[in-house]
Image 1 (cartoon, helix red, strand yellow):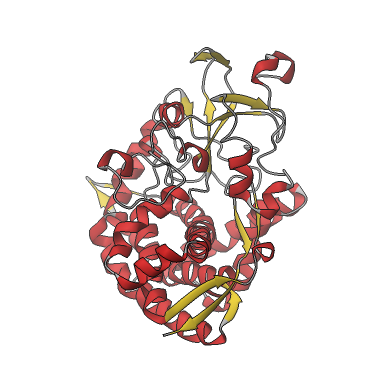
Image 2: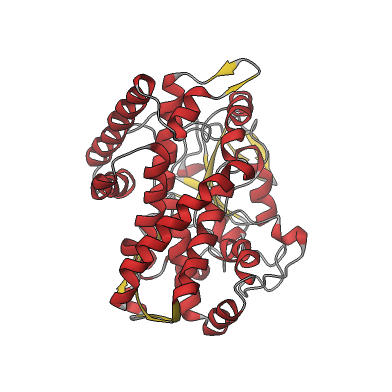
Length: 402
């Protein structure tokens, strides 16, 4: 049986709600800095969202994320549930299955393959920015970040771009609809749609990722149609949320840090070297693992079934690993650069990280090619949310063109 609230020593209790705390709306990052980052305890238990542990030490978080046998990845989420969706591949696969999936998927997500996707990402970024930037003032999340990140995905999977608004509604409802019934409905809509897409590709192959997934073969092994559907489901969720959230936090940072904005504007070659540091500073996924069996972890008793949450934003601000962690420093040591948790850690580290970093770099380069100034309309106009993937809901900005 998983840990229950009466089992928790008072010294380990926390009342922080990483999903519903009202302070997350005004600024999710600042709220985590005020609460979890300032809490001297490395491990605490909160009764919210079904009850779960919070591990905020980078080293302890890395230990959990790197031990897939003791800390499994199914089901992912806060609260952890899978009522509204299939098992996500490869994210929620056990250690043995994950090795198989990773071997099959690497040819699609390795750097050489990502390079082939770059031209399409560059064209789309240019089209959207050339259309939106002349307005001077707009919501960066909804007019730029989401259309580009989802647009790249739509082209990669051969989906209908005219249904983008519907896709946004499904994704938002999947994560944040007010009732579980609504979340389940959104999840079922995504699943039914992607099932039809994959079936269509079986009958009529296209030059896109779905057909690549159906055809990929390593040492005689291929993915089943159902496995391809589950992979596409994960890609669907990630494509709308992940890169758009990365870009939104980064653009807010650049609007606040005018010295950095000018430095990157003057030296465009520095953008590529800055991406990992910007991602470290703005990691947003609250990674979770499920304890597979009773164990004592650094003096704390975890039980089988316990949900253990590793907030990447907090672990990536751990001063025991990152010198002056709240400061931007693109020249960090190789060890520091390789340690951040923006894409997780261990065997389940995000297989699409090269795609995500490429998209972030492409958008930033295209943006700096076109604008001479960037600022927020107002700090109070920017709103956000917590949850499994914390993020911004609005980010109105003002720009001037070169």
